[in-house]
Amino acid sequence: MHVRAGELTFTGPHTFFKAPYLPLEATWEADVALLGLPYDFAVGFRPGARFAPSAIREASARYAFHPDEGFFDPGRGVRLRGARVVDAGDVDPAQLEYQESFRRITEAARALRSRVRLPVFVGGDHSVTLPVLRAYTDEPFFIVQLDAHLDFSDQRNGTRYSNSSPFRRAVEELPGLQGITCIGLRGLRMSPEAYRAAKDRGHILVSAQAVRRDVEAVKRLLPQGERVYVSFDVDVLDPALLPGTSSPEVEGLSYSEALALLEGVVDRNELIGVDLVELAPNLDPTGLSSLVAARLLADLLALWWDRASR
Image 1 (tube, rainbow, N blue to C red):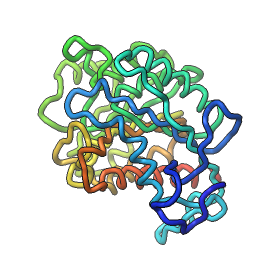
Image 2: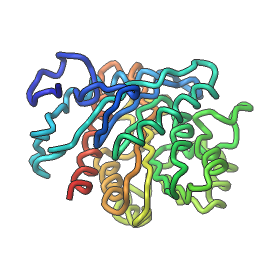
Image 3: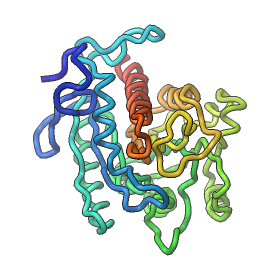
């Protein structure tokens, strides 16, 4: 049974927006489903992203809704009414065996795609995006990456599958990947080689400063009329808003700026998948980071549902 609107946030089992838990082994279909990817063995700085799926579920109870009622936003009216949401559980990682962990993630991502209109993947560090993308080989698509970091390094400390390299491997492996737009870049540690390599491949690279100057101009750089996968690294947000992440960078995006960009993606394209990565709830004892991340997913799903249900 789905939660009734108004049920206390802290009661009952923790599932995504208090939606039914239905494992991939069962037979079901839905509009949206979450799959947790609790893997952070590829992180290069502070660990903890393995705890994010659990933390997102707990925090999302704050925004739980009943599908018959949706929830009411005084600025936009009733949101998510009629959307069938499911929690599909987690992929169990094989700990230090990254190839087996990635295989399990790809297999589960394919299964989820066959059941839902919009799959939502919650990592985990950013390395998990690669095995998820391996499940998207049926049609051409674009990626919009919101991230403080490019994640396009060829290798880090001799490792080619760290959270610094998922998009470098993706363009090498996936012929259907047509292009990447990366927005929110900033910091002092970016690899010049990775930056040049991404530019040479025609990727659109946008700094956080450019977003602050003119978010509407940046929205015009987004794909239009395409199948788009969104990869949202929470470190794109300013650490004053979301400190619980492995590699925070000062001068990040505001919530409003990030949401405006997501709205631009949804309005212009067919959204085929979303991941949210690099949330490390253990690094924020206040719980604010998890609440912000859960609210972001709620707003993104509402934007998508507004368009999908027209």
